[in-house]
Image (cartoon, rainbow, N blue to C red; front, side, top):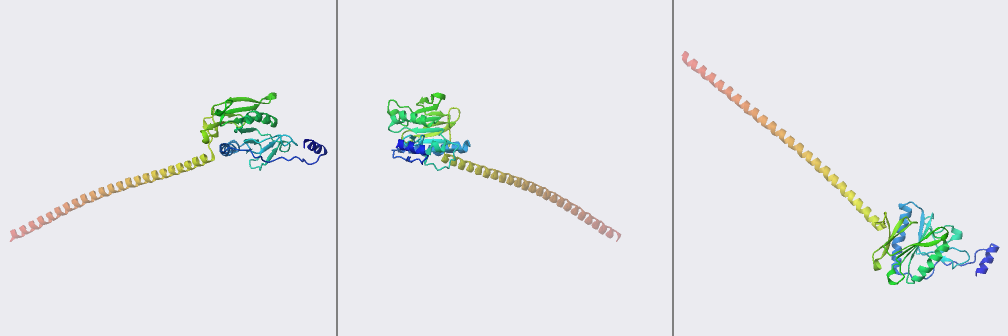
Length: 288
């Protein structure tokens, strides 16, 4: 097949090589759950949070040499920088698509030797600047390492720059930390930020929950402000009513005082009239 492909290339004929789009490889549920959480989280981190156009894919074949269908890798997760995140990727052929993945993640399967030994060699051939190998079951075999970070270093190529059993490593390409969260079947890989990767980047569900909580808090604050405004208005109205009542009471007291004064004056006037009448009558009797 290789000889036929080379001959076709020399004659400028269409490439006769069959490049499979998938292969039947057993994927554990744990691997699937890790990727279902991590892939959209990383896509949001790159495209929205940092406005870096990038396609984040998973489990597609990447071919690095034309006419050789065995020259391929199928990263559990990878990043194609500058590629529209909505691109429909079935396979990726470097001699056609011209974009080398800037990052690749391999989640170690039960056949850990293949991922430990074969993966770095193949990603070196692809030209990936950074490869991270994550072993969810590193404690089950003697050579196990939770995290292995490979980076391209000048002419030395892709070399391992970090091997750690800690819960996190930093990805230079992604600009964030990768953290192992949880245990057993609840183990997940999250991305984190901060100097030491202490701040987890929220998932879509967490962002939606935070947004909902923020809206509820804003609504509660608005309702509280409205209630305070209503209480202040009621207090002002009550104070105004109290002042009105006090004014009315003062006016009533003044009116009562004036009425009392008027009554006294009327009584004095009546007494004076009676006294005059009495004196008049006494004077009339004296004349008689």
